[in-house]
Length: 286
Image (cartoon, rainbow, N blue to C red; front, side, top):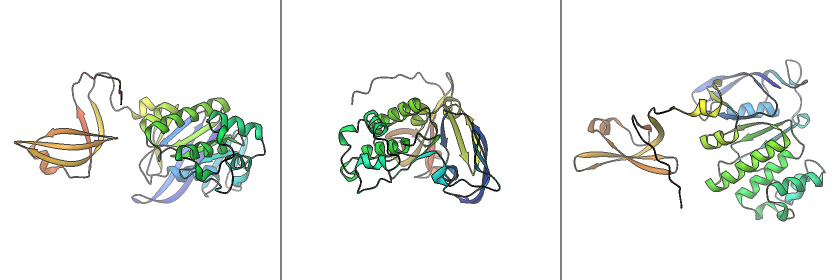
């Protein structure tokens, strides 16, 4: 069990705010941490890793990592940390990047085999694709069999197909090593696929806590559906107005009234919704 009770004054997206988190996480849980930029997600990970100071207490099973008199150094915390920017040693081979953490070739090759990198073990990081580098980073984080794996939007720079592939590999490693995992993500599909618990952070406080389907789904049953998007343009075609909205990787056209055309602002976030629908799902053959 992980007990976290920390407090730290931050300069957030809306000025000064107090990061105030009090929660317990069960061993082997996969927790997704979401929320708007500047809400304290990355700072929370860094505090757990021992890379930033905070007031309060962090206890992992029977081991104290932080209290009012003591702060365990990052090197002594049994954690793995996966960054967005890979943070690999450019002059070391893939294998040596892993062995730098722990001299265990058997474990290193096992991890490389799981992530389909075994044949590339002798290559340098600069010869790899972004997805391959992130897999190396993930393998390296697992080399010391961490009690706690921390991931800060590790897949945000990858294309959708590679993201899905790495999500499957992350889930496989999580199940095999039974590592408690906390991952920052803004991708609802990623959160739904990987996590068994979702925490939404807003202005330094946890405002939602539950399973992905309960926290992220905005509708249930036959109720109306809605999607958030960005308003890109408003065009007048004959006597009607059409709004162009970006939703994820797609653009959609929505008919709006003349009053809405006057009040909506290009670039703002909007909700596209309908009150009654009969959805169809077809296979994407692209």
